[in-house]
Amino acid sequence: MKKILLLLFGIFFFITFANADDDFVMRDYDGIEVPKGTFIRVMALQDFSSAYTDSTNKLKFAATDDTFQFETKIIPKGTVFHGFVEKKNEPVIGTHGSLVVRITHMTLPDGFVIHLKGYINTKNGNIIGGEMTEPEKYMRVPHYQEKIARHFVGVLQMVPGECRKMGEHVTVASGATMFILFVEPVYITHTLTD
Image 1 (cartoon, rainbow, N blue to C red):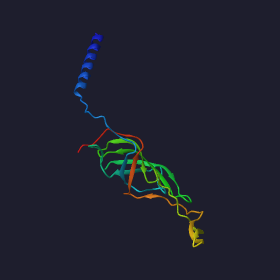
Image 2 (image 1 turned 180 degrees about the vertical axis):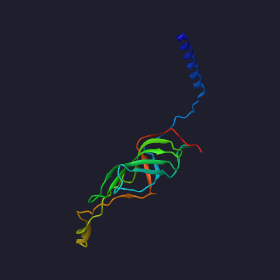
Image 3 (image 1 turned 60 degrees about the horizontal axis):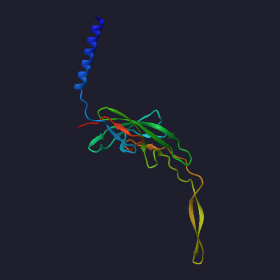
Image 4 (image 1 turned 30 degrees about the vertical axis):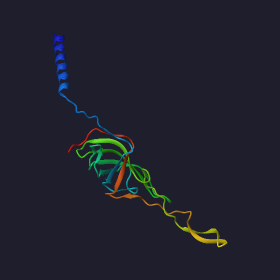
């Protein structure tokens, strides 16, 4: 008797889930791959600096434009990108302070989260700041040119000295326009339709 009930229950269970698969129709959508090396223009939502920001502070950036791939809007305007300071260098003599900001995920306007790997990109690679400081003083050095009016003519040139000034902290103001560079492909599995 137990075997018959178990057999009937198994058949009922199998028929129920077999029919459920027929009713469930998936849409024809595999997701979109955004290639690495893609730039997204964003705006900083808070200020951060090498003076007071470290890896424990969470940074947010908002997309200022819609990003399309063909006719599909993959990153809508207002998407929030979340990140943190991955590396920080204090200012020293000769070099300003610098920051490297890593982006870990983005939150679409409807609250859907997509994980990614990216960095805030500048003209100095992924380093914000870190430029060389001005020379502390200039020295006068004679510079001679040959064979002008049949003899050597000399002029004094100002040449940077050996010592440089003390560096300063780098600060990014709230509302600053920046670019995010994707260093790995990002798989968009959720898009918004208007």
